[in-house]
Image (tube, rainbow, N blue to C red; front, side, top):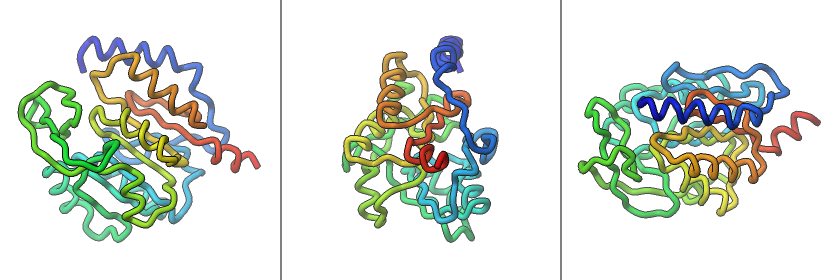
Length: 231
């Protein structure tokens, strides 16, 4: 993390600290590892929930825990070869886990995924966050297209850690009428402040409440879940 990114993170936390609303249910808990985990309103999650995980990397502790602890079904997407190898090694025996080696984007197409500058890192970026020249090509899908293929009328949780593609994916997903109950989104860096605020504003206008910020991980709950819990 660069000094500029640290400063930007402090600024974002300052801007949104008054917008983070206290969740009225049970205390929030971090699910998964310190590196790959997400803060969730755990009392909201129900057995049989359909969960999409965009961006696997080399940590599926979050996916495994929501399967083991809550009885969710997880569908994970990542075209990176190292991610596929990690899943093959660590997802064995999890019948409620399905992996598809595709990226998430705003249309069904084939795109370049650019490598990180540090070869020890696994995550590749459609938008070339780190401005490198090395890439591989892979198929990409929209959330709604995957839902049609997998036979899902709705999804209950969407986690996206997709190296800068989150802004376009969220925009297109809402335009196609898809509104997950829980939206867990990492805002990958570097990202212009205007792009960050625009995406968060778009999410809030779609009926979501921001309930937690953990580093660059934002957790939102849709109004349909809040009204149901209040009733």
